Image 1 (cartoon, rainbow over the protein chains, first blue to last red):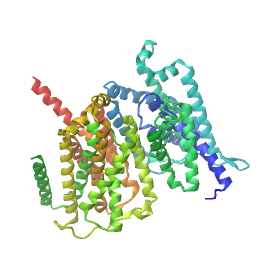
Image 2 (image 1 turned 45 degrees about the horizontal axis):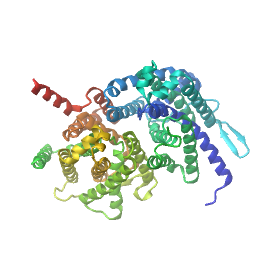
Image 3 (image 1 turned 180 degrees about the vertical axis):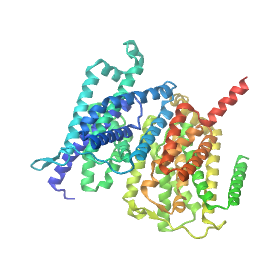
Image 4 (image 1 turned 90 degrees about the horizontal axis):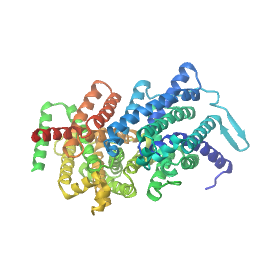
Length: 291
Length: 311
């Protein structure tokens, strides 16, 4: 097959931008699933919730979606803390997190999705912002701002979280909590409180990721499902709990998906992530940068 | 003995419904029986071994689409189609299990979700079975044995439900069932005591997948039109998880009770309110039950009986 050079370059650049955005979507799960071992299947539902918050504020008050998502961070943080509290009291403490915890999050996913459908219907919703539309051009390379802005936000979020996790006491405690709870208690840190903080942060990232999503594409309640596979594929491929691994895997998936949809057609793109996930699980379950 | 009782109960149900003289009861009954099969099948893997399968819809759709495929090439009678659907889903279940069951439980669950999307993409891109436009199945005007087609489908699903429940009951009381229970309670300890955990898990995935495929095989004839996004819909997945969870996962009776309860509630809610609300009800009940009554309805009564006999 003859592959035109400019098409390939275009697909690569689009893939990198897409991958950057995927990293923002995944980083929350890298924390909750990768570090805390909480299989939060409902994560994409919270992202869609973030999109709708951005959409409502944008349409009724004309506020920029990214500003909205920054303002909504504490709300999502509180929501995350509340969800963790329920999860901890009902499942973790009883040692039943495997089966019933999964069912719990699956139920949450469902309730959020159907709730949004009942409230807003299945119409696609979108936001308005000055950077949706124009693009930058550098020779062959074409950078649409509506992809570039989410990508940059995502990189900023990842950098901030990586610094937080490696440089602060709380961050290091979060990294430690999955490995040895007892040792953490000896360091005068309460494992439950640390886990709650970490889970709340992971849900807080949904606010930003949701705003990015609604900037990139119009959103309707069941869009989140497409992301379940991508998120977990990236998380597993990158190596559980590793943020740099998450970024690399996200870029990789973005590029593969973009090339697939450029050369084979967009209807094949969803299978790519899942195919990648199945292959990773079968051949290298520890991921690229596994712990 | 149990089989005889089940068949008698089924026969009583069928003739009872015939007395009502309303076709709708058979349509609704078919859906509820289908959920009994799906919930029981899910429970063989999910309830007995503790591995959560989110891909019920994928196995169900495999059964449905193998019917579409056969129907387009050479129409066969439905019992044969059920067999084919069961075999295909069983094989896919085995392959799936082989790829992922060596890993921790959560990976298996995520991989089942992944498989559903991969299969859906394949079907969407496969024009022979209708692609994303869907496929029409025109059912024969008359059916063997009973004449009326919906009654015929109902009887088939009834038989399938009896088979599924019997299989679940046999497993539960056999060595296989005890093996499954050891995996659920402590897989590492089971492995250390010489339980062949991987092989048992593969058996569970295969049986469970095959039963789900069998439940899906008559579906195109029931609905008349299949298209990917509804056949692969999350509704099947959430229902087949919610039903055993609400009924109770450790015995065969749990999924049956859960399926009848939720099935009836949903039929009523769909008719009286709307189909979106009925899914919300299922989701809310699932979350409520796993938090408040983690052992389901059956577990609740077992505990009460134990408490009563302890006095």
